[in-house]
Amino acid sequence: MEENPRQLSLTPDDALALLRREAEALLAQPGRRVLGIAGGPGTGKSTIAQKLAAELGPAATYVPMDGFHMKHAKLEGLGTVQDKGMPHTFEGAAFADFLERLKAATGDMKGPGYSRKIEDVVENAFTVPATTRLLIVEGNYLLLATAPWWRVKPLLDRAVFIEVPRETVRARLMKRHAEEGLFTEERNRAHIERVDLVNYDTVMRSKPRADIAIELVTPA
Image 1: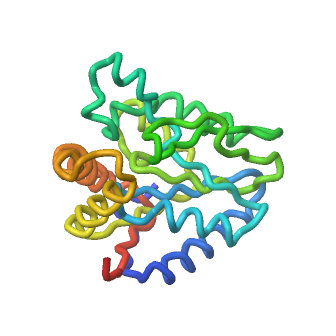
Image 2: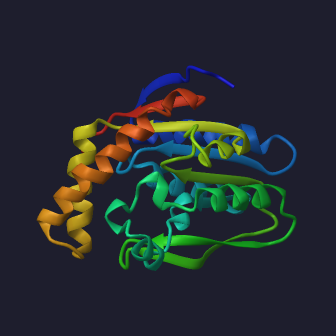
């Protein structure tokens, strides 16, 4: 376990190439392995994770953490809808349980996803075939040391942290929220400042727990 990650500054293409090398090294080992890709909201980690899974083909499966958002109805019942996206609005223990089962599975397993179009969880959004030898697990909170998230890091065979500047994240998230068209610009701006950027800061504090930290060099 490294306390200080190897720090790199790479373009998205070079980052993808590095991740492919890391993935191939894990695939060369016996059994089912897990590559974790962590980082704050709007950093581009899900795009890279999905591209990596596509490049690796049947040997790998993309596993998003976002399917473990608490369901919207549950958040409404708890009165925490306004916090949606923060660590306490996820089923963190269920996510850790799922990863444990997934790592040891010998048969096909289905997992939940999250749709920004409806802002809610979608059950059975993806399948991890029994033949999968590498799980590409991606999410904001993979490296948090707080309960129950601390259970995730030991399940990762390799942990990579993706980051971009805070101001880039703010601009990207404004664009993302606007594209979905579910809320007003004022609501989106308020949510980004009160939730998303606070999450970004929380996730940045978990960066030292990664094996490799990649600052993406990108114009936007």
